[in-house]
Image 1 (cartoon, rainbow, N blue to C red):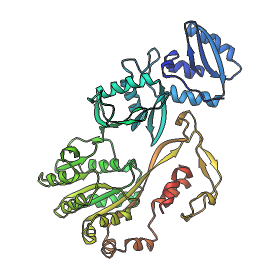
Image 2: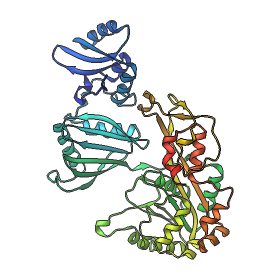
Image 3: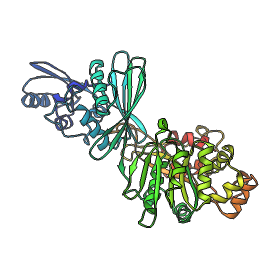
Image 4: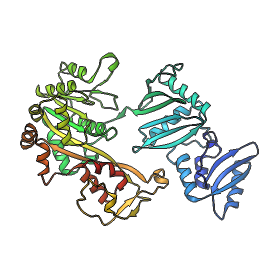
Amino acid sequence: MEEIIIANENLHIVSADLANYYKVLPKENDVETVTLYCLDSKNTAEVKEELELLLGKKTILLPYSEIQINKALSIYYRKERMESSNKTFTVNSGDFLENLLTEAKSLKSSDIHCEIYEESARIRFRIDGQLIERYKIERDNYLELVNKIKIRSKLNITEKRLPQDGRITMTNFDIRVSILPTLYGEKIVMRLLGQDASNIDLKSLGFQEEELVKYLEAVKKPNGIILISGPTGSGKTTSLYATLRLLNDSRRNIVTVEDPIEYTLKGINQVQLKEDIGLTFSSALKSFLRQDPDVIMLGEIRDSETALMAIRASLTGHLVLSTIHTNSAIGTVSRLIDMGVPSYLIAETLNLSVAQRLIRKLCYSCKEEAPFVVANFPNSFSIPYVIDKIYKPVGCNECFHTGYKGRTAIYEVINITTDIANAIKSNTIAHYFEKDENYKSLSEKAYDVLAKGETSLDEIYSILLNV
């Protein structure tokens, strides 16, 4: 059978409670008849009779398998969704955008993608790092939604040829809006920002005990640089804000420059990057040095000018926190050297180098055992030990039928000791860690998570490639 697809304007035909209780989904609706997808079971006639009483219409039921019905229910009538039993939740209703943003927030989505194609349009949420389709909408309704978003974010509704950036302010959070002209219309990505960082704790991020000890030791130093590396979406900003929360007290002056400001924290002076008017990371850092700071947080070190300014700030008695794009904690040193920072300055100022990744955890409600096959691992990865059994994703109502629910972090933490500083000066840091029997790379730590049965081989495969 074909996959069940529900038009957004039909969702109001049955309430979320009724849909989940009777295992039905709306297909079509007219004046006298309503057509519903239903669970293929022995009591279909009984369900039909009850639904006709509840809906007040002749009801036509189309039996589908339990797997397809449950998958569609989890997509269109998820339990965490807003209560809307008697409310029309359609694009052309006045509160669709508000409901969409609120729903994304309640589902802990990081981004909302609104996309248009030749004949249709869709809305997807990014949850736990993965995009999940939530709504399919008509082209005409999509154009109306685009205009509503532009008006809310104070953008030019007549400009359809150029990209635009704006911001929507909600009660408890902000949303960064990016609009991009595409072949069939404008694509919109809305990132949910402005989350309160007061509850972020370093101990809850996933550090192992010995890693946390190294991290806290470096953070407590009065000056120097702490760098966190990793790709976009690996949790670097969350780690930085957990650190700032630890350092934030009445005795310290903490200033940050970010693009964008993803969290808010009382007592910290936050600056939004504005490159179009010359407010860059390096120019902001120059101004920070005249603000009598104790701790400086730079959203990212992107170029040699910013890197050298950060080095200068740490040399003059400031603790500098920042992120950098490298594949490993060791690679951070090479990246700084490529940016033109002398190795002796890196050795003198770098307190800590951290690399991190986020790994999706398997849903405990539906994961299944899978065979351990050595040939399925990358050839470049040397398997440290054989596992009796591993697990694979399946998919159920609890996990949006993705097979994964929640994420965990893995870290590579290098505290710069005297020996490591000497290795940096002599440009032999990679060779130094080859001889260190206690050192574990990110790929080995990802393998440990696989061994515990918390994730799948597919999820960590790309990390295993970066040996």
